[in-house]
Length: 103
Image (tube, rainbow, N blue to C red; front, top):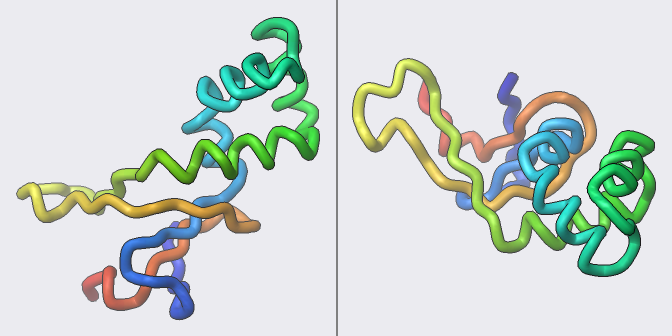
């Protein structure tokens, strides 16, 4: 579900935490291991599953360098796909600026 976020800038989108952790799980696991917060992949996955606060901090760092691509089906031409800089929001809906959405 997509909802309006009038306070957003045109290049940003609000990405629900649950969706973001699924999309960027491998990057978060790598961050946990590199920062010596998890000794292996299994420990890192358990920290993610338990939703420890450090997981959200690492996810914030990961989101800074990874834009997301959003489209509205059916995508019939390349302008139907747009890139956005994500940030975490509560809830289960993706937030977009009203001028980005047609209709």
